[in-house]
Length: 306
Image 1: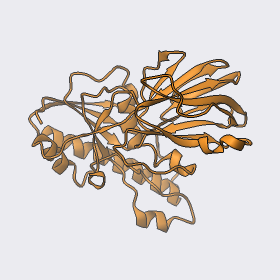
Image 2: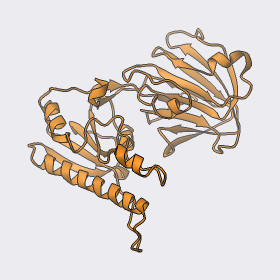
Image 3: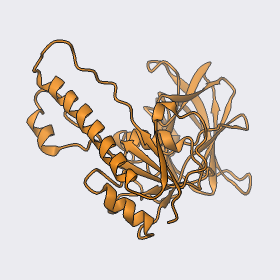
Image 4: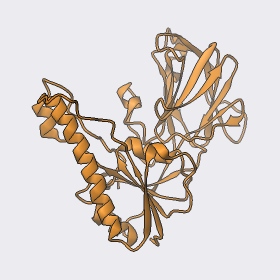
């Protein structure tokens, strides 16, 4: 792979050591996480300095414009940093995720009775500090190629949202204790023939995930993991009230040639894209279109997916 410019996108650290000289295991754990992450950044930057291409580093929170004019994006953090990068990327530039702070199983077991010692999952990260240079060299030599991951396109009242979801979207009332009312129907893209009946829902919201996101919140809610390269979407009506005869349509798939049309019937609502940071307000009468028509994202995947 010809490489002239690389953008390194970094997860910021929000932990600061308390003034007290506490030795509580949780504080030591957080200090360790902070140090491991910073050491990973320094290590990856040292590797890039040895290469012949131009590169620059940027904190992910400072990213505000579409990513252009680079040949590769390297994210150092976890899946959240890769997700944030994806919101500024089209289908031309590939991304390599580096998990800067992988979970240590023995540590999780050691502190299981005190606190959650899970670190970063890094489901989509193909590298850690242990193999970053090896993976990078394999990319440069063309030995590994990126995979195309499906993303979700969302339109509200026929106006396309600028952000594509790599993991999932959630349409719900802004108050988690409030009821969401909406109706949904799936249609084929090439004609107006419906593929499902009109499903009227009273629930806590509607979640739609990609294959990449099907192992996250969707799976936790009772959904099923999908093959990572699937072009279908999975949807689930969350906590439906009295689904009755249409219960079979509360959970299913939106095929690559289909679009889900959702009519929002609550006074308030929000469409959350890949978490809570990116969201779009909706209201009674809005029509939300959900499909996999979005440009794919080129991602160098971990070997277990290949």
